[in-house]
Image (cartoon, rainbow, N blue to C red; front, side, top):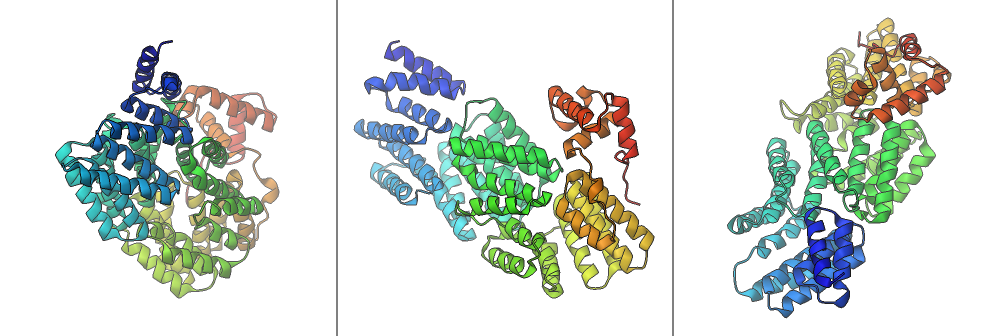
Length: 548
């Protein structure tokens, strides 16, 4: 094949987001070393997206040199800026900083106003944000926006909106921050943004929505990211984080086996080139293991996560609590929370309340619960309100005001139910049982304990079951359901009379997956019909569990 034909094939494949085909064709055309600079950039992008980092950086470097050779200084500065941003994010701070400094020098030497000046303000803003300089970050992102507006640079406009949104979230201005994320995502989903910038924005927006406790947006954008990745099946970069976000949602909804599988898939993608997913994949794996009561396995996952350079909190502190080490848990999380940025700290407060109470420091728990209430505006996201109510209820019990705790806990329980978060809802019922017991209502306490027990059994939450044994005095470990959480969901829907197609739509699964789950149910229970599965659901009380 001639070089010109290969170039055209590569450009066509690139435009169609077929990254492997684009890489193969452009690499073939590049063998004689005469690929134009803009095609070298396409080759670089295709290499990076398919996990070939060394080749990608080499091609980007050659593109930069080609631009310089043709005195295209602005394009050379832009390529240098992107190389610097990629390397800095990758953790190669010295080399990345060198490329960013080169880009800044070229911008100065160009002698003309250009959009690269705005692009260079983006890493400056994120650097300030990471160091805790919220005001400095805000100024940098606003300046980047101002430059980008003048040049209609869609990448810089969207990235600066992302940064401004994160600044707002850190300042507790959740509504304003989330609105900025939505606007940035409109540009991404409309196809106005380059592939690498799109992936950065997708992953950052989803993570920021979780920090803002906006579950609805996190789910919506995770589904969008999932579709984006599925439309580009050969893409490695960003696909690991897609699996991470799926794992987080699965875990929240009680599908712990699915969450574990997604975390493992994320690790595979991390090893193949999506390095940004390494910490989160290991951390989410540890979270599932901790929730299941697999404490040694969780310890190892958190240890590996810590080796990536980030602290696995609040998971590690909660693991120490599960291991019966409340003082160590308290020390770990107090330190981590004191060093965290405001948004990340907010994500640790619920765990800190739980740990302070376990360590016997009710006054500290009250201060933290009140802090959480302050950052929970009226009409906030349901998840944020649920956590705030649950924290307040737990502290009120410890303070001896069980009567005031019950309404808070019931409010939190209802919100967790609406969010389809069975684990947190069951934990609310345990607290409600303790409040009922403190008020002398043993009958209602027993009912609350039993309702929580059923959910913990279905989830396989061994640590919670053990703690429940100690609280309620009821042994129930031997009666644990043989079904996974997802299988229980399928059985419940079968009992409701839904077809496999309707179940697939309700659970966002394929019909083939539903059929596999149902086959597993039949094998585990020794049954062979939907009628028998329905009977099992009613016998085990899986169909209707409402708060008394």
